[in-house]
Image (tube, rainbow, N blue to C red; front, side, top):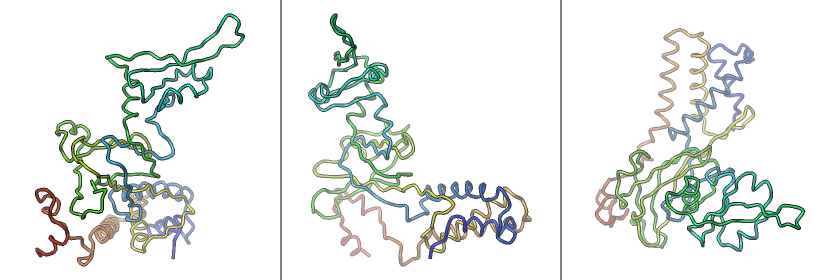
Length: 317
């Protein structure tokens, strides 16, 4: 069975005396909905909402651009072409000229194209054409950003709210032992690591848009990357929640605690019990049963040249 977001809000409000006869006071539903969205966002960021976890396989690359519906990194007035035939086939307009549109062509790496108006003596209307100029150092910042974008691997993935981990995986049918996990480092520390370090970093560029950076010499041969991430979990008041009962109870109790802080109606002992109940529910979800725990050993991932297989690991027990 499912429950709705509205039912979660009503139940939470009832438990803290804000919903007489299950009819919330004015304004409670609006505030509770806002609080619930914050709770869901936090729990998703904490990897508690297992149903949002997903993964995508991408080609190996040192710069990976993940975007959803909007591609802000591209630049609103920047254009990219494979060759000059594609460039010349683009129909320029007065608006392109007014917007100062720039273009780069893959087969001409050191040329920047801008829009130029053309008007002959006999012409009544102004036409527009591309004007290419060689680019030399120091390069304009906008041009540097365009070249960086051109070098990226672009992958459209829906609703990426958080990146959890990245694995290098073999692109052949060889054994799993060739797979290994990369370590995350902060963006400010990324340049401290050598080009052979098995590390990565990322920066969120906008909602659902991420730039992932990896070192250039962390792998060789036929490999791909597996990116594990959490999807955004968007709700409205009528959203049906097809989630396990323990998660429903967690959302209700966590929201009740937040409402009790916003509308003080409980005494200190009741507040403490409510907070403890939230923590117990979180701990029960976060800690798997012993029979469900995954066996992980450091030497599985760090055994010299990664020659230890899962079979070898289990045989040592």
